[in-house]
Image (cartoon, rainbow, N blue to C red):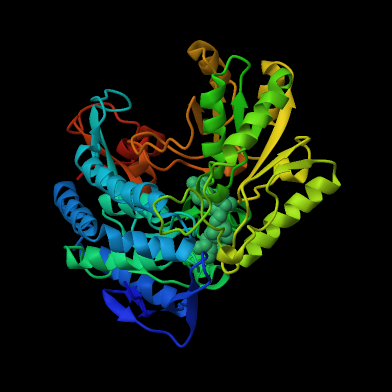
Length: 509
Ligand code: NAD
C-alpha cells in the first residue's frame, strides 16, 4: 500500500495545510508519507465543527441502540481492511507484524465493538428510590454527553489508545477532536474516514495531526472542549492538567509506568523467565505497562539471571514485516540515544550489562533505530534506570530478601500502572497483589489488557480509568432530575425563605 500526502479530517472534509510532517518508518528510515500539519487554527476549526455537529443532534440526538449499530458497522468495515490498518501502524511505529495484527489493530477493533455493546447496556437513566424526605419525590439520574471531547494519543499504540477514547466518547453521543502523535497519524486518519463512510455524521470525529506543544496544547486548553482524554508521558500529562484547568475540563490521564515483575521464591522458573521477558521486551519495551524491573529472590538471583540471559538470546530481532520477527526497532534516533545514555549512566553507577546494551550491529540494521534486548544487573532501586521510564528493551534485575522487601521495592516508585507476580501458590500471589500500589496486578501473566475491566494507574501513572463497564462514566455529565410528587400538599422547606409570606398576605391572590 503506497501512502503519499495525507490530509486532515475536519467537518468531514479533507483539509491541507502550508506545513507538512514527514512520517518515517523506524525500521529502515524510509519516508512513509507526508501529512498536513495542523496548528491552533485547525484545532479551532475542528472544535467548531465538532460543536456544531453536537448541537445539530445528528449523533448526540440518536438513541444508544442507533449509535451501537453505526459503531458496529464501522468496526466491521475496518475489519475488511485490517491488513491496510496493520501496515499503516507498522510503517509509522515499527511494531512487528505479529504485534500490530493482534495487539494493535485486532484489539483496537474489538475494543471499539465493546464500547458499541456498552452503549446498549449502560444505565443512561437511573431512577432513585422514591423519596419522602425532603419531599415526596422521584429523582432520576441522567447520564448525558459532555459535548466536545479532545483526545490526545501517543505513538506506541496509536489506533488502540485513540479508540479507548473515541469509543466511549461516541457511545455516549459526544463529538470528538483527535490530535494524534506526530509519528503516527495514519491509522486513525484512515479509521476516521472509514467511520464517515459508514454512517458517522460529518464533524462528529475530526482528526488534526500536529505538534503537541502547538495543536495539542490548543486542544487541551480550548474553551469549547468539555473533556480531555490523554495518554502519554507523565511530564506532558502534568501540562495537560494545567492547560485543562483554565476552563475546568474533565480530564483522564493514562501516563507512564515502571512496572515490577515480582518473582517469588516458589515460582515456576520456566514460566517466570518467559513471563518476565515477555513483560519487558514485547514491542521493544515501549509499552506503558511493561515490567521493566525484575525483582528476584537473592538466593535464586544468579541462577535466574543466567536463565533469563539464555532465553533472551532467542529473541529474534529483525524486519518488522517478517512473521518470524519477535522484536523490532525503537521509535526514533532520539529515543535510541536516550536509552543508550541510561545504560551508560547505570554502568557508571556500578550496574553491569549482562546482555545487549548497544545498537544492533550488522548491515541489516544500518538503517533504522535498533537497540539490542538488554539485561542489567547490580541495579539498586534508587538508580535513575530503576526509577525513570526508559521506554526501550531494557530489563533491570534487583535482588531482594523476603516478600516484605519485594513489596517495598515494588511500591517504591512514583508510578503505579501495572505489576506482575510469579508464584506457584495462588493464595500467596493474591496476598502480594493486595499490597501492590498499582492499577493492574497480573499473577503469572503480563500485558493482560481485557477490555471488560478497568485499566489505569495509581500515583503519577494517571487519573481515571479506561475500559471496563464504567468507562462511559467519564465521557458523560451527570444530571439529577427531581420530580415533586406531593402536589404541593406535603410540608416543604419553603418556610426557610417564606415563613412570613402569609402574614403579609403576599401569598394571597
Ligand atoms: P508524549 O507525552 O511525549 O506525547 C503524547 C502526546 O502528547 C502526543 O500526541 C504529543 O504530540 C502530545 N503532546 C506533547 N506535548 C504536548 C503539550 N504540551 N500539550 C498537549 N499535547 C502535547 O508521550 P509519547 O512519547 O508519545 O508516548 C510515550 C509515553 O506514553 C510513555 O511515557 C508511556 O508510558 C505513555 N503511555 C501510557 C499509556 C497508559 O495507558 N498509561 C499507554 C501508552 C503510553
